[in-house]
Amino acid sequence: MDHSQPRTTRRLSADPSGISEAAALLRTGGLVAFPTETVYGLGADAMNGQAIAALYQAKGRPQFNPLIVHLADIDDLSRIAVSNPRVIKLAEVFWPGPLTLVLPSSSESPISDLALAGLASVAVRIPGSSTARALIREAGVPIAAPSANRSGRVSPTTAHHVLDDLDGRIDAVVEGDPSHVGVESTIVSLIGDRPILLRPGGVSREALETVLGEVLGEPERHPLSDHHPIAPGMLHSHYAPRAMVRLEADRIAPGEAALLFGPAEPAGLRDAVAKINLSPMGHLAEAAAALFASLRALDESGAAVIAVAPIPQIGLGEAINDRLQRAAAPRL
Ligand code: TXA
Ligand code: MG
Image (cartoon, rainbow, N blue to C red; front, side, top):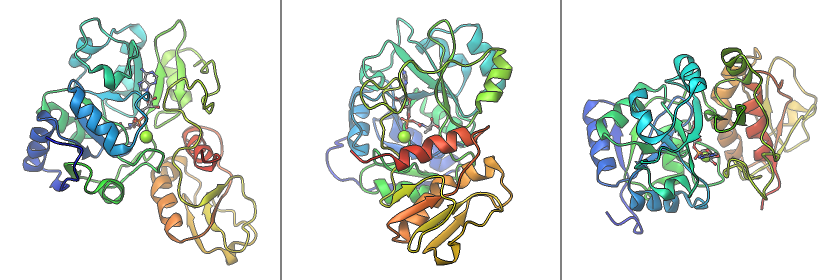
């Protein structure tokens, strides 16, 4: 398949016939977007270097940024990664689900070096979405899948978002349900002596620490640093809508769009160009599920600035605030 040319993007249904067509495309080196419970992923055969190169190209992604390898079953883990007792503990509770573990690569790993960006470690996840697992199982290969957006843009939580960014650049999208978690998986490194939280996400820090019975360490360098990113994907500006994003807004200026949380009504709301409340009752899981679609929708209002109300830094709030800080970061 030639991936340098524009392609017709097929829309496949999330039923057995759609999944089997999608799996056939993946087996032959195609690029297929599919639903997961966190965000839609853009899948390619993780063992096929050419398919991975095409995937980076379709996203416009810097090639030093490694991909998460998605598996359908834990039995497939030992082929690509070296396990340890913490993996067993976490997998029992959180897999399938929105947790990615960074582990040492196995010596005979079939994963393409390009997918690993040359690292000796591999990030692995078994997604909670049954459509995703059915697709991976039927493809019969490990699937590398970043979020199915153009690099640096807001992650997609619907098939429609995927087409907005990637129509004509990928072979197919499986049109499943909207992603109900709404933020990407939590990434935990289990490579060193202590577990390290590399990216907050769909499983909260508190839940992980309870299951592990130990405190998660922080990355050595600040994850928002552009210079030596820990998870190489942790570049400063990310998830960026076209509008500027202003955080911790307790009042809305005329002409701004408002992204709200909870029952409080900030001053100036009446003059907002557009407004969306992520969760009027103040539920963080509901807010996470609505986050990316709301950023896209407020961006479409044409407002120059999206003002965002404060969101508590607990549970899923940590992942929500992480994504909002990246959306607000200076553009490079
Ligand atoms: O929820 C998710 O994780 C979604 C869905 C599609 O599964 N995927 C996703 O992939 O968010 P992506 O490519 O947008 O983010 C992967 C992150 C990047 O920050 C990358 O640097 C990091 O994982 N990563 C991958 N391999 C790594 C490794 N060996 N060590 C440290 N970080 C790694
Ligand atoms: Mg992404």
